[in-house]
Length: 197
View 1 (cartoon, one colour):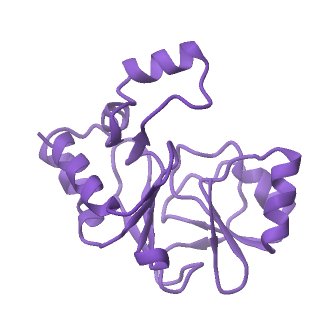
View 2 (cartoon, rainbow, N blue to C red):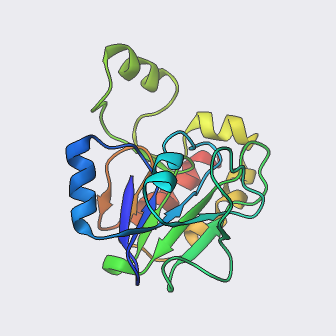
View 3 (cartoon, rainbow, N blue to C red):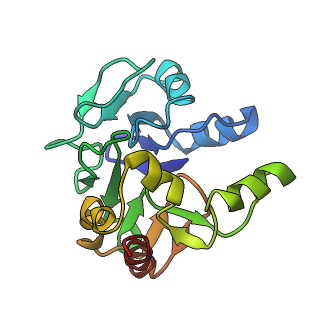
């Protein structure tokens, strides 16, 4: 889960249900005012935040809301004024985008398309083994399973993710794996190039 400080409160992206103590830590940071849904594939914990807080739900055009109430569409307006939505378009699998903000020399927040798998922290033995077999390994990557579900191969991968290479960002926070502080844009570009060949 990613939490950013916006103009009027906190912005939650890639929502994950926290323990009671971690939820208290989040509440101590300030009011949660916005929930950004970057991908149709993540939907389990978002309704908890929408029910717990008086917030605005932000989604992509045509996103599957499931149990979320309609809110605002990411487009001309953003929960962070200088933010940029990098929409991957109407891919074959599910709607997804990344979110760029100027914080800390530029920070890119992704969900499933770009992941950072450097260890199996939080996984049991079988989960760690399965993750490796499914291609979730090797640091920053465009995972094979994502490409399969989106029905993207070769140059189509680079085309769908082209917007990620048009921005400068030092930091990367993904929906899967630890964050990267420093040099993140070069690692993302390299990952896209590897996945496109």
